[in-house]
Image (tube, rainbow, N blue to C red; front, side, top):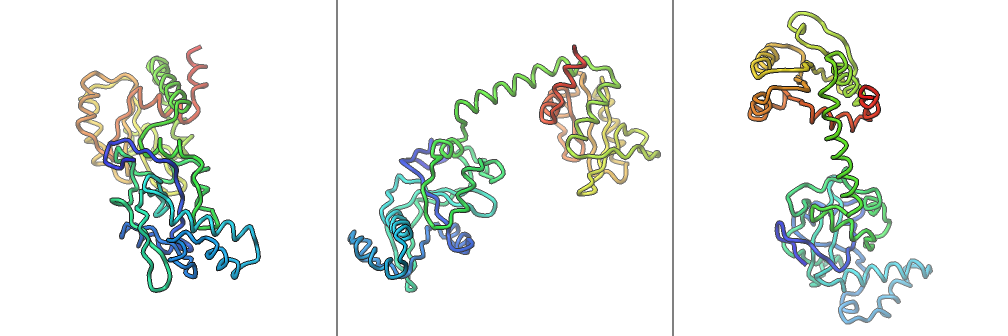
Length: 314
């Protein structure tokens, strides 16, 4: 077991814990670095002494369902008996949180039980990347729908890969193929005629939901694509050049500074002068964005435009 930065995380198994009904204990547990367990009526002494027949008797007074009794008893045992090499996870604030815990149970006046986290709850992998729910598998996320409090995580291998910032071999193979496809499209993109390049850029943005609204005139005469998001009503401008020098890039950057109504501006070229790439990287700006052939290849694959490019090359 390890939970230091950049050290590999290992675990004998993993458990999901729901921190309170509707997640009402999540923030408190994360801030206090604890696991919290309800089951107020369950006698603490009986659990510590392993008198599970006593616990079962208490549960039987609450329900006649043997299935429910078995489930509740299993969850109580997990909370009391899980060792330090068991990985605990939960979901809070749109992220996955994980920790290891010492089996040192404290009982509060209202009968609730807590056990301390070793170190702190973490919402990042060992590389410091946030474990956002949007980047997790549906099977792992489905644990949040569990109706009980504690359940086993059957995707332990997948989970450990996420925490260690690695991927399973079959996923790595697909990623390599994906990257090879992107690289192979770069020469095709660089061979596009200027008008074809503009069509490709237009298609990339359309596939992302942007709508072309045309050129309004005035300072916008320097905009090839005037695009609007129908959802956010954000307006962006795009200038497409088959070739470009640093001087041309700087000129458009100055023009964009005087433009009104655009939140962002994309300067796109498939064949920039060598000096332009370095200058664009040094002058990174979230509102004035440079795309070269590599960025176009990535966006084309994401937008499902590989076939369109192959038709142009064939």
